[in-house]
Length: 199
Length: 180
Image (cartoon, chains in turn cyan, purple):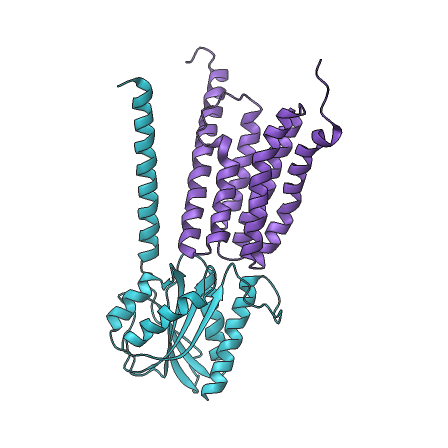
């Protein structure tokens, strides 16, 4: 084999190994569960008790949306226990009036850690579920899959909210700031409105 | 003796580069406002002008070192605007704009030393990063966005490693002239 061909072969092998390694790392990151102890927001809240479960994904956006959503509920008198989707997250739903599931969307489906959490939970026993999803493009494309997922696990979908990164969330211009800042403000107001509706 | 190209033709390559530079703030704004479609359109125009301005300048006989640097720094401004937009939107890695700035500074520093650097991606780095930004805003899927950020990291680390290695070897040779 000539020196040139040997070098080309080595270059091709190196590129394939690097690409394979990068994709494997990305897949591992997306499937990786984040363990967070159960924390409580607005401990004195008496309007209702919520369990909020977040699959954080790889950016700050889902976490920011969840914080805003929880604040919207807390400001309206709800007590929120919150954690991240993992093998250690509680699946004892008996005490809760509502479960809020927050996740980014990868390929039209909620993040694998939240899917795994729902598998472990098995049956939501008809509990009221609110899904909050963050997507790259139009979140409507992923909403049907999320609705089906909640239905399969015997949850009663109370509401589903979708926020996009690269598609305007607020075409009417009711909010200010960047597209993601608007989404965060909208999540807060959506939770406040939901809390008012449920009281 | 060949006649010089008409003035309009001689200015066209610079006009294309200037158009790309003007697109940088537009691109930033479209990204943070969530207009993925408009951002993708900006990047398509940028990639076309990037591919066209160099050959056009050579054909019309106006290629110059200054023009080449204008092209490089315009690419930098555009790419930096895109990745700053991703980071400012809270979805892109905040470290990427910093790494892009470092990488271009290293490119500018080492390109002045010599062109004879073995840098497998350096020549294409502008195109690679523009394509990665395009993938983020055109495909609009968070999985592909993460893959594009990862590819960007890979390309930047490769070019930085090649150029840092070269600079280190050059400095070493100057400190120890007998070293080979």
